[in-house]
Length: 152
Image (cartoon, rainbow, N blue to C red; front, top):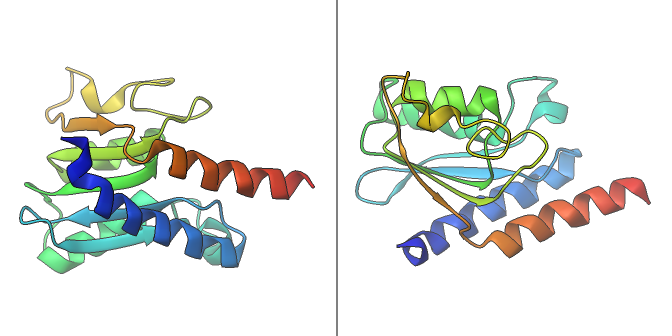
C-alpha cells in the first residue's frame, strides 16, 4: 500500500527542497485528487512570507481547494514529508481529506501520533486514513541536513 505513494512523496520532497532557497524548513506537501493527479502543492513559506500559517500542508490544501473550487477535499490524499503539527492536523480534518500520507514522525510537534493524535480523535466528525513511513529515510535526511547546517 505504501509503495503506491512513493512518487507523490518524491514530489513533496522536491517542494521541500525548494523551501531551502528562502531559509524555510524543508517540508513539502502535495494534494492528490481521487484519480491521483496533483491538485495542490506546498512548501514551508513562513520565513519567505512572514506568515505563521505558511506550513507546507496549509499551502497545499489552499491550492487544492482553489483548484476544485470548494473547501471540501473529499476523496483527496495529502502527502507530506513530515508529520503534521496541531494546526495542520486540524486543517486536514476540517478539509475532509480522505487520506494523510507522511514520511517522518515529528517527536517535537507531531499531532498524528507523536505528541497528539488529532486526526484520529473520535470526538471529531471526520477521521482520515493515515499511512506513515513513506520514504521516511529521505524525508528525515532532508530535515537533519538542514538543521545540522543551521548549527554549523
